[in-house]
Image 1 (cartoon, helix red, strand yellow):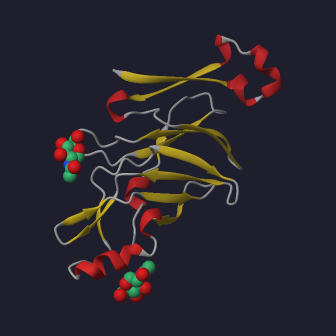
Image 2: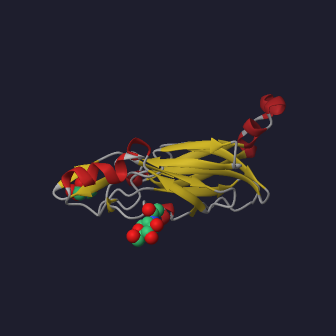
Length: 169
Ligand SMILES: *[C@@H]1O[C@H](CO)[C@@H](O)[C@H](O)[C@H]1NC(C)=O
Ligand SMILES: *[C@@H]1O[C@H](CO)[C@@H](O)[C@H](O)[C@H]1NC(C)=O
């Protein structure tokens, strides 16, 4: 059973919104078991118009690492492509627990870079036998490459939390 996401082209053009009709609709679908469509953002880069679709349980049932799909609005083929951001999302020099981090739960456009931010709130850092679930966010460039990943709640704590326990990294 797929989650079906219907996108109306007219929404992009505010002033022609009254022209929206079913003929203009594009249908993107993905697995509902992966929560495809949990978060959605319109996105424009030099290559065209896209719909970004978060799929925070991508990997289910083995894991819920999550990912984001890019869906082309301009092309006639309405197929979405997985960006594999879950692989590239990483905080250096810490022991990460990415298994169920649920990347793609949030999608925010980044006006500064022209790209977007996506977060995995269940990312955790392992320190000895403890897990600190601070969450992780990735800053993604306009051409869908990860610029940097950061753990917002642990910026200075990434190392200091573990130094306290002296059993990490
Ligand atoms: C991750 O999610 C899967 C699927 O829901 C679950 O079976 C597994 O126990 C979870 N693993 C961890 C480490 O939380
Ligand atoms: C990670 O550790 C290596 C080796 O200790 C060090 O050279 C590097 O600067 C560290 N990277 C970060 C981002 O802290």
